[in-house]
Image (cartoon, rainbow over the protein chains, first blue to last red):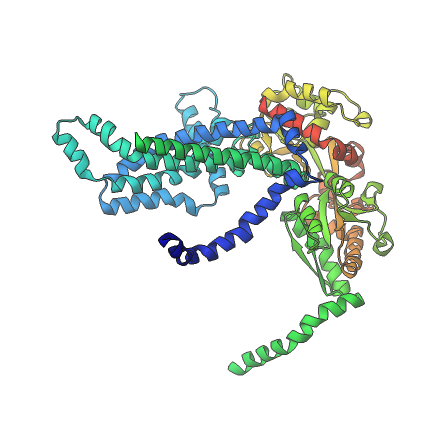
Length: 276
Length: 345
């Protein structure tokens, strides 16, 4: 009873945002996705078509694969960075956070093209490698999956580092001190105390990176050299060039379901981790 | 000091009722003050402004507001939502065929356009071809020159990395020409044969490009030595040699979205007329080396770099025009085959 009486007041605060989201975001998306079953009449033919030809589903699979690699790369680079930032003095932490956020101020297109200047055949890195005689021919960093992963990791790293750093700063130093005073080695303290405490934030950041990679468009188009088909690029073609909105809506629905499933799975794993 | 502002404000307020009422009345009487067009943007948009809008506005007093970009999806959204915000819409030849089949565009009033002489393929009942462009072979000037797509495919005698468009409608005709199909016998396209030919070259293709800016950059960076590129991106570029031989000639059109305001449509036909005038086309071609559909344009182009333009009598004769209707009917199957091919790269 108390809850029911309390609800309207609390509900009032979120109502404006909720209505805005509903009218301007959720409703248009739902109408667009509904085209996959309502056009030209009630039908499941667009889904049958997706399954029968299977090629777009395989593009989706490739996208998931790239997203997974990007997530692992972000975690491997981001975790040590956040760990190192945690032990800096407060002033230096501010500086470090500013440096992590800095790429957000630069257009994603500029950053993508910058990689061409750095890693291309005639780029800085390849020229140095060739001049030092370390390689005989330019190394193909770009225009393949490696190029896409480098580009997406560069853009998405802050999304992992910032929440992870915030969570690590909140971990109480006394817990580690207590473990050390009980005779645990530094490695054991990290493995048994610090890492488990930082794990939820790592998982949350990783799932964020994973889901954001699904929608990447410019980076795969430029740095993938067209040989890494991603689902966003396929959708652009279907919607903008071929005006095949129904097929695009069906594919988008599948993408949305997969995304929600990934999210639900991460929550489920998180919940299990918390109870065990 | 303040008086002038106040006066300005006062006049502005006074003008509002009239200003609000005016467009309705004016439209009913066919007195259009301005209309909007959607075009491809960039230098191409600038060329429309300089070549066609300027003389049109000078002649009629009607302002034209340009918007971009021009995806087909936006046109479909405009027509289906019945809010036609632009009376002229630029489309590529394939998009024209798709839009026509999907009933998204209206017939033009060719009597009102009253065009000066134009190439036949530019005069469609429902589309005005205003700008020729081509997808051609281009290479670093220090590489061995090519004369055909067969040479482009021949990586043994013409060594070097390639870049091809990530676009099935361009890659398939190129592959068939490379395989020896006569330009006149291209359509209907033999997809199986084309993809077999594409399989042969895929190992030498470093980049399947998506943006027109990529091929010239890739050539300059020495990332590739040979490119298939939009002609306007590579023509006249230092360090790059081009050939229009077997180039895939294509046309950009203007169409009128279905349900457009009739008076605006009537006014816009005057702008299309300006687009048929050779003198105006020459001004536009100064901004971007794509050309209008006048057969007499050649004499007005800068003679020193005549080879840069796609529709000079020499260049037009050696190129191949596509068949947008075939693509409109077969695009799904071809595109799926293309995605399949790219998954196997």
